[in-house]
Length: 331
Image 1 (cartoon, one colour):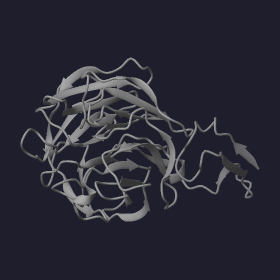
Image 2 (image 1 turned 90 degrees about the horizontal axis):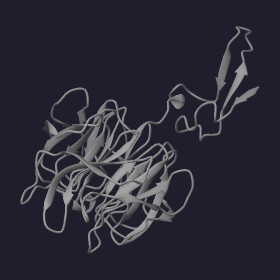
Image 3 (image 1 turned 180 degrees about the horizontal axis):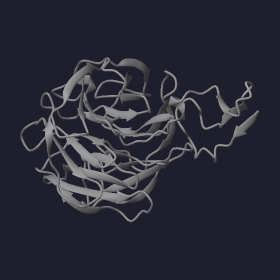
Image 4 (image 1 turned 120 degrees about the horizontal axis):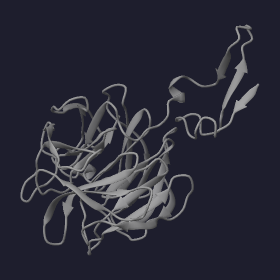
């Protein structure tokens, strides 16, 4: 029996392997082949944060327990496909994370519930654990093995829960400043949270490592001196913040910051309107904004912008109903 090292398979290859290496065995049938032991083809698929198929908009004020999805293949409207377990306004200001096979929502205004739903079928979510306290408005991140929620409410805690098994979250560190209403971003190795509000508004970008428990570090600044309520998206190299609200007005700016250096954000385009409190999704090529709150109203519009080049967003379709304080994941 031989063991293929973690370095050869390029790190984590999917939930279930735990990054411990994969065992192979010379065929006992003498057919000249090597056979995997104890793994399936699905477990060999690498976790990728960006989606190739669908974006999901989840919960929020006005669409409080609905799971709806829209396709990345072409512009069009979303469809309501299932429901979360918490069906009241307690679930607004929730946060979304994902594994290779499932989407998750965590928290809410008066909820500590961690919900999970499958990507493979349009099925209602199930309660799989609890956050440390009931709170929302944090910043989320995802890697192959864990979901993360940072800050929110009056908390500065970074907490995480395991994707492989049902269970509660655990405290693994702190963000630099206690705040809520941040945008959410994930690189292959780190989680990022941007801006936020705790009386004053902040422009700080925080970064924390997935590989080890520990506190976050200041990773630069957004273009506005203080902003909250921005919508987050991520490609392989950059985090994107779309819209948000400053102490004086709502904004339509799309800005991005590099994962590789702490040089701060730059303005790369505009949304179609000034807006805050929307959900965000990431495909392999585009960022999306679903719903949200322009001055004085709540809308159902989905818009998209391209990662590869700087430029403005354009209309992609509509949610089934108006929604704000919703969250997003992708598959």
